[in-house]
Amino acid sequence: MMIVCAIVMNLAQDAYTSLYFETTHGSLGYLWTVVGLFAGCATPFILRLRERRPELVSLATSASVLLLPHSPTISLLGLCGVWARRNDRRTLIVCTSASVLATIVAHVRDVTRPADSSIWKHLFADPGTGVDGVPAVVNADLGSIIVAVTVWTVCTLAAAILSGLHLRSRAYAHAADARVDVERNRADELANDLNTQRFADAVAAEAHDTLAHSLSLIAVNASALQAEALKLRQDPRHAATSERQSGSDLDRLAERAGDIRRQAAGALDEAHSIIDMLRHPEQAGTLMSPNDDTALTRDALYAVIDDARDAGMTLDTWIDIRDLGAMDPEIGKIAFRGIQEGLTNARRHAPGMRVALEITTAMGSGIDVRFVNPTMPSVPTPMHATDSGIGVTSGKDRKADIDDGGGNGLPGLKARIVAAGGDCQYGYDERNAFHLDFHLPFTRIR
Image (cartoon, rainbow, N blue to C red):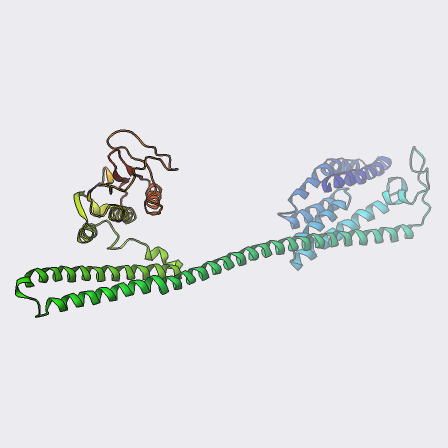
């Protein structure tokens, strides 16, 4: 709209100017108006740059009014853009002065021309004059016309400046609203983080008051059991005939009590680690990173297998592990947790049954772990598939993806393995033997 308005006003001013030079037979002046005609249609398009370079647009439009027979309207539009987007005092003074000068020059040029070639004098001409070849008859003196031009100039300059200030204020308001929205979102996020942290602190306190306390009692009672067993072992009242057998039983009792105390102490340390993660979530990455107890190393693997056997599990193993030093610790931790989960699952659901475990690792083939164990006679044979989409197949190794009795151990393990780019299947075959097979890619250490 501004471009169209500027073009129309330029063409009107150029038409009256060309009429003056046509009447006075000024060839150079008429050529000047021809140049102004083409420039008057092209120059207004510079207003499209008013958002990025408003000061350049203002000075260029003022220069076009000074050098060509253009209307001061285009200069006022450029000045409005400067006041809307700049607050530097020097820039505002320079651009405003240029626009004022251009406006005054344009109006002076128009007023000093004869009535037939002046826009302002046509405004004060008698009706019916100045058209159709009838000379214009001005019904006002020159002083009245100058006063009207002065008032109009002041009003248009004020309107341009006030419009620019209004646009600037509106832009500031929009920017302030945007900042308020950003701060409000940030406050909401901080409040949510605070509520989450408060919840984590509450969970940590609850875990410390319940789980840690219970594990401490287990450790204390196990220590007391171990002490009582040693005391009975050293009691002289045992008969000589039964001393060897009872001593052996008491030794096993003391050893088992020591195992309980050691495992309870380890569980207490793990509970403290979980509490620390809840209280300090920013350190959770460090606390959950692989360590000597959770990495897939020979020592950690043999330790978890020995613990399972010490707990009474009959475990047949086939272990062929290679290139462990080049394995990514994160992948090794997932594999180690999978082995732990498999042993825990077998110990919980098939106590006293013989468990077969096969572990193979190689850089070229990846990590493969297979568990097989018969189930208790009372365990039904579930032959249904879960939502994972892995169905039951017929044959010796038929498996179905099932839930582990309502728990989240095996489904959670499968989710972690799949997320790491591996595959996990578990379920019962036609002989009611439970299988847990998973494969992980051998990702090299970064």
